[in-house]
Length: 446
Image (cartoon, rainbow, N blue to C red; front, top):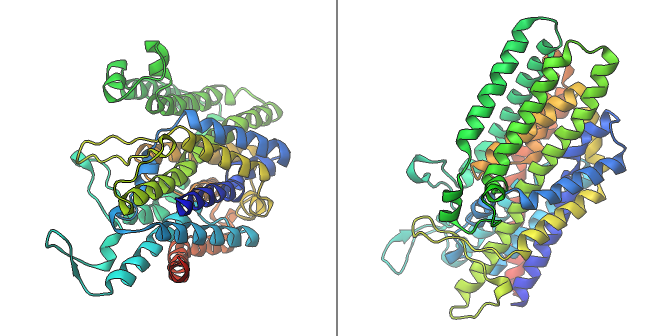
């Protein structure tokens, strides 16, 4: 039990570090455009990090918890993974490199699990109780097909989104920038497109809403009132937010051409508050869930390695299992602690990375800030809906690159960008190797 408590404490420390390591993701453009002072910006981001507690479900947490097969690992594996993740996060923060805290955690967890499998079974195959032959690399959930044709999961999907998340962010921000640029012209075409987009958004989002009957069927509603239960269902809130973001930008696009330069800049700065809040909300929801997943996995491993143990209600965690129809259970203090830790970390700031994100990739104005943060937020909501733990760092960096490309290719400082990409590529393997070494060291003493 002592080791389990240590893992939970370290996981929350990692969440805190994640907060100040990734604070720059949400505030770099707002600080660079002088919409908010650095202190105001971190307060703003921290508030919306914490607000995510009431918005998002636990889909990403479930994905992270199942990075490795919990029946085949012990608590030392998870401890080694968390320690390695903390070390790599602190190093990249110190060097001012906006690497991914998410991939650090996934890489550490997977690397320690593989080291454990090699230590126990070696490189040759071994036979389990059912007579099936397994190999050391099978301890990690590399790929699992989606249920009923849904989105597949596994470490390979997470690795794929190292490329896909920034590409999605870049494409979205590029398209939003083009949309805004055309909306600034006094022609009817962009306005017709904007109105059509608003109608399509309302129609699509209304069709994606989960009705009250389905909420009751899948769990207890948050409120007695039908209206508030539907309005505050995590699934519905995400789509409400998507609609609100798109409709707000659309409303601005309809009046953009009638504003002078000063009025347009003032309006864009106000919109940056909305876009940075939306991104901070996505950051809190995406990244806090990863730590929830680690804590849930640690409790599951503790129960597996101590059969018959009675768990106190505050640690009564059950991982969901769609194949067996088992619903997940997460005590309220775990998400509350995780969201609090990441919000506290965000309050601590991360000024080295703010400099990289806000000025070194490309020159950012309020126009680019709105486009980048809006694109980043929409990308995070989309991937969270698919239960994929993506990097908020990669997403916003790709979004900043996307708005830079609308000016000209040379507007992006590709030397800095290439260095960032190398950090992204190396994060998972270095975290995995580091976690493996930490696992072997800890195994000598524990």
